[in-house]
Length: 70
Length: 158
Image 1: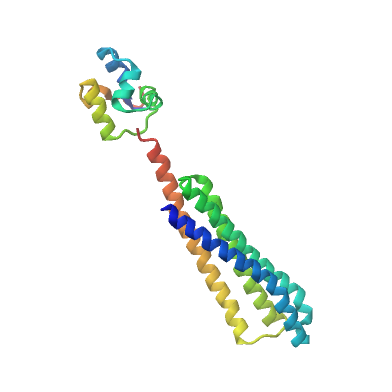
Image 2: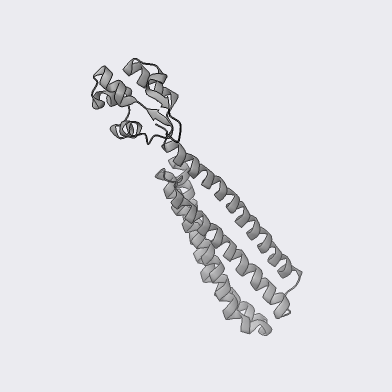
């Protein structure tokens, strides 16, 4: 997937357990796993907004584009 | 869709099913009477009774499909690929019922050389109404298929 979700990096920086993150954002643990594993196909702006709020970061801190062939 | 609509629709469908069942009982009786009044059509009593009962059975099968689709709506499972099968079945039932009516009318007029303009009109009416029903159902099925695809795509949005 050319768009990489760097949630685990931000979680490590904020020293936040995945369960806490999931409950504070209001996501199911399964959906957090989907985001972390790079299997997510789409994300709502409202979800992104809550993630940024909880992790105190910008969308660019958790979303990264990688060229397809790399 | 509200549950009240589904409940009332089911109530009406039961009435239609009961009416159709009554019709199936009446078809052979009416056919036998016609056979007694017009002895030249006596050999048609049994095959046309079977055709009539069969056509009504197709309508009943179509109503059962509608019933299943209503259950899927009530369970919020209408936008799943399985629902398309029941729409297909409903269209086939309607098409079969219309085809039986049209073929019977055609047989009476062209093979037996009996019946008047009323029978010809009835045959064409069955073709037109049946064709309209089938094509309309196919068009609605396309809408349902598009909605199923959209729902599946939306389910992946986190």
